[in-house]
Amino acid sequence: MSDLDETTFAEEVQIAGEVLSPVRANLLFAREIAYPNLRPSVYLHQLENLTEAAARAIGGEDVAARAQALAGFLFQQQGFRGNRAEFNDPRNSFLNEVLARRLGLPITLSVLFLHIGQQLGLPVQGVGMPGHFIVGVTTEAGPLYLDPFNGGRPLTRAQCLELVQQATGYQGHFDARWLAPTPPRDIVARMLNNLRNVYSQAEDWPHTLSVIERLRELQPEEPAHVRDMGMVLYRLGALRRAAESLTEYLALAPNARDADQVRRSRNLLWDELARQH
View (cartoon, rainbow, N blue to C red):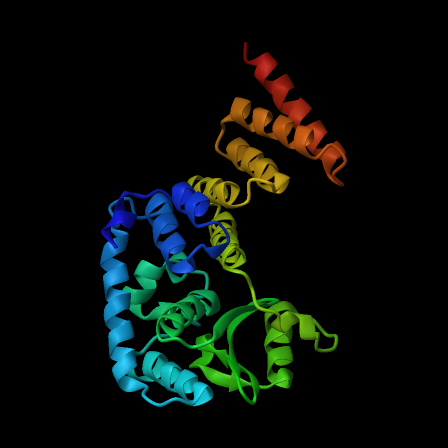
């Protein structure tokens, strides 16, 4: 457990591969983005204690009943809940803060449920619907969907559609593809993208840059992260690094839809740098 204290996010991503733990990844990026003195092992130990308490509280063999009992344990007995009042507070995205404050986003509360559920042998998966993250449970009677942000309530398909409509403004019909399980690495990417949006909306460019750096370590094949890094570096006044990042993006994605626009921006940056010398 303590070995995680000596591990970087990039190392964890590389070593874990497709079985990356969203909990471990979150604690590592929390330390690198916002909490330099954080010791991930402390929070892994807290999660271990929560799991042991949950095991004592949710006996029985029926999968659906155990999953709903776990929801009751976490969201009623332990008091974890969605932070409606301050949804865009970045602390909602960091599991160390979720554990300390009992407040989180749909995805961080889901990650908490998934981690403990998996430790207890429950067949649970993350489900990344548009705009709202939930959990799925495989039962003999069919899939069961629970909403950790709203107290772990069971969801019908109609309620899933309603959640998507509320979160995104979507006005169409339910799409069964929304309920496909979300792979662990995609869960981590979604947590990071949430953070990037929060920090960029607040014009907190240093933290935005740190998040994008983690995204690039997670998804090195994604050129958009290089472009976004260049735009944030520009906001920070690092013009040469910004121009270099935009040049790298154009090399990686020469036929991107925004290539001409990015090229013009990059050229303006080089012109500005030339005028400075």
